[in-house]
Length: 603
Ligand SMILES: Cc1cc2nc3c(=O)[nH]c(=O)nc-3n(C[C@H](O)[C@H](O)[C@H](O)COP(=O)(O)OP(=O)(O)OC[C@H]3O[C@@H](n4cnc5c(N)ncnc54)[C@H](O)[C@@H]3O)c2cc1C
Ligand SMILES: *[C@@H]1O[C@H](CO)[C@@H](O)[C@H](O)[C@H]1NC(C)=O
Ligand SMILES: *[C@@H]1O[C@H](CO)[C@@H](O)[C@H](O)[C@H]1NC(C)=O
Ligand SMILES: *[C@@H]1O[C@H](CO)[C@@H](O)[C@H](O)[C@H]1NC(C)=O
Ligand SMILES: *[C@@H]1O[C@H](CO)[C@@H](O)[C@H](O)[C@H]1NC(C)=O
Ligand SMILES: *[C@@H]1O[C@H](CO)[C@@H](O)[C@H](O)[C@H]1NC(C)=O
Ligand SMILES: *[C@@H]1O[C@H](CO)[C@@H](O)[C@H](O)[C@H]1NC(C)=O
Image (cartoon, rainbow, N blue to C red; front, side, top):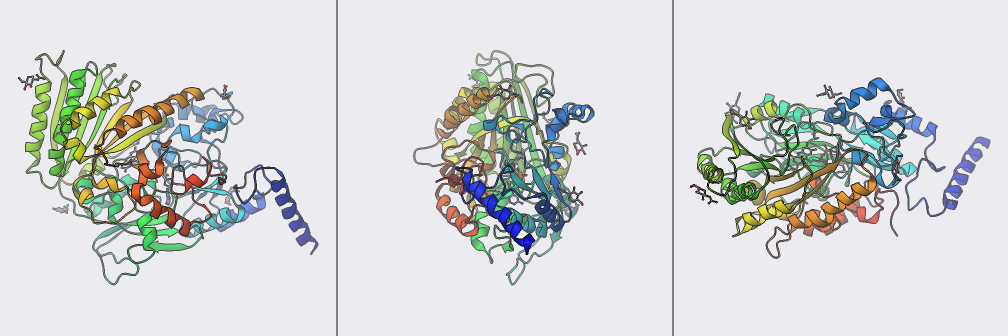
């Protein structure tokens, strides 16, 4: 009895204290580590027991490079290359893929690998605790613990999110990485369905793309997923829509989902498919990761595995002169015809490279580089003729008849792989590059705009006006049209995906340790100057959007830009499944009701 009263006195005193500490009223804000409401060691220990000992206390990856926990050997290893190792960053709960989101800019809390040792390591936006979830039950326990103690919750899969959505300060992290099961079903029967819907692959939340592709290669099937090895297949990628080089063939990745299993904000483990929890199913296909629940598995439709034809065209010029931009224009002139045959394209424009060139490793610097990769499944008959017209256009530009001051270095080849998965397992291996400070700006550009008179010239002109630092690029991804345009799937992705052909993206960044005012200036240039240049590539009244997974993290009108007319419906679904805002991510559905870090509710 005495003990009981002593206990409740502490609780009462705690709540009085936090109420007395001013603006931080516990119903409006999450509990912070400095407050009495923060879980005690005993509380954390009991959570640890319910999750099979998988709770850990987390320091930022760079802690070994700074006082007070400097460790010369481990730090040197990081500095000597592991800084950029995406697998290591995916695995470590104290890392994201982008150093700018590990840091907490506003608080000047950093713990970079490679900056001076005597800059003290700050926790930044890295969670102080992490549960490495091995099962749906571990996730249920973590969600219940966070809601009971009013602790900010965040989900980390691989940490690739370009808006830092898989990190959050003062939070309990749920890391999904250990959930790596992959299963194949010849005739998958969704829960609640009477009969099968055909071949399918079901993956756990932590599976990465390279593992998924290796599995598919063994089974001789394909799934629609991303162009990377270490990005996750079941997390932010697919819940945000997910584009693929296979999208013109079979649609967006989210068009191919047959079923999700999900832990909800109430701590229930439910199924979402076209028979059960249909509203949640709709929202999880394009509504964005970290918002509607924690997905524990995804079932993808599995397709056949025919040959894949790929072409590459690389052009190097001394500078990004008029002739260089003419080549960009001629690519866009040929894109509608190429896409009509089902071609997807991924292109990169570097107005200025620094040695070594990011593409060919060449030691020359200061050159302009334009690389184009095209992919076509199936109709290889039509491919050469559409491609020949592009090649002719490029070779015509690449001559010394007054337009070009010097011959460009031009490489062109076409290769056919025996199957799609042969290409994937051969090409998507090794590491993606993480660890830098990176920001993006992007916009979807419609087929109608690209095919309009003056469209390709306007695109080339817009790109030429985007000022970049050496080795920064503009990327054009033709990952729509075809099955994306004709898809009958009703999902939450921005409606303009149906009219889009090219997802245009500016990729920029800075050296870790760059002063905050310079970081902010670059961010403002992207948001206020450069994204609007891409947004102007629209016909009157088109209302195109941006792809939320690869977009400006400071997008002011994110609801309209990421979801357009679907936003109201998404907001209602969010209110139904998560009225208390357990799952809040930057620029996600419902995030407008919270401060920048999802710590305090507004109003
Ligand atoms: C090298 C590279 C290549 C890329 N290629 C492509 C591409 O080809 N096509 C494309 O569409 N995109 C691509 N992207 C963008 C990619 O879709 C995003 O970076 C995406 O956020 C990655 O998802 P993730 O789950 O791996 O990352 P994370 O950063 O771990 O998570 C992203 C978001 O999803 C949430 N989340 C993670 N797991 C879950 C879960 N189980 N349940 C609920 N929420 C969850 C997180 O909280 C976070 O909000 C690429 C990115 C990189 C860096
Ligand atoms: C959780 O339990 C495991 C296994 O007993 C232990 O190794 C780990 O340190 C514990 N985590 C915390 C935060 O105490
Ligand atoms: C990256 O890190 C992983 C995990 O620590 C390791 O297995 C791999 O060899 C590293 N890759 C490179 C290229 O260093
Ligand atoms: C941020 O911290 C660094 C390192 O401690 C310091 O040099 C710098 O002046 C700080 N910047 C601001 C804006 O406070
Ligand atoms: C894989 O499937 C394709 C059809 O999608 C078939 O043509 C091919 O022969 C199969 N390959 C193997 C190795 O079985
Ligand atoms: C350059 O010459 C080629 C071949 O003679 C021609 O097709 C092309 O239109 C010329 N380019 C310009 C910009 O004049
Ligand atoms: C095709 O071009 C790419 C890019 O230049 C190059 O990496 C590849 O080796 C080339 N393939 C052949 C068969 O020439």
